[in-house]
Length: 167
Image (cartoon, rainbow, N blue to C red):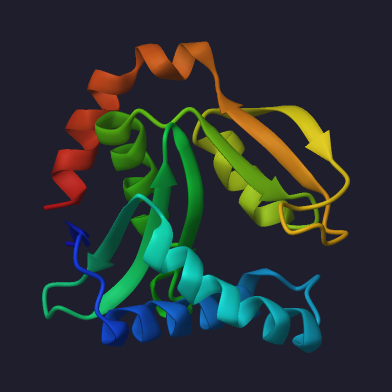
């Protein structure tokens, strides 16, 4: 069982812990990034964590941080899960919560991150556009994805499933 927490106060200790989760997650999933790319992005992550309008963390029963997501308007801006907690349903539960509670409609995925693309497809997102560069101007092509209309109509079912998984 996992617990999602909206983080309104964002003390430096929390930002450091989440940045470390980002680092471990990226190293396990973003194989297209070089060590130099990661070092360049690392300081930008803490700024993003401080400034994203809605920051939610996932913790286990013992209070250990397992992952986080950031939401702005109707877009999922970031979702990172600690490698030890990946592929156990946490990401699915978090995205379902974001769709149901925050009404997210959009997410951008690095084109080279095939697993993330497949994950969001499975969650009901469809690609609608492509950018050659990411939001920072780096040559990491992005696929812009939107929640499909039929997924929007299934919110109540997903909300019930989410409640069974996340407390």
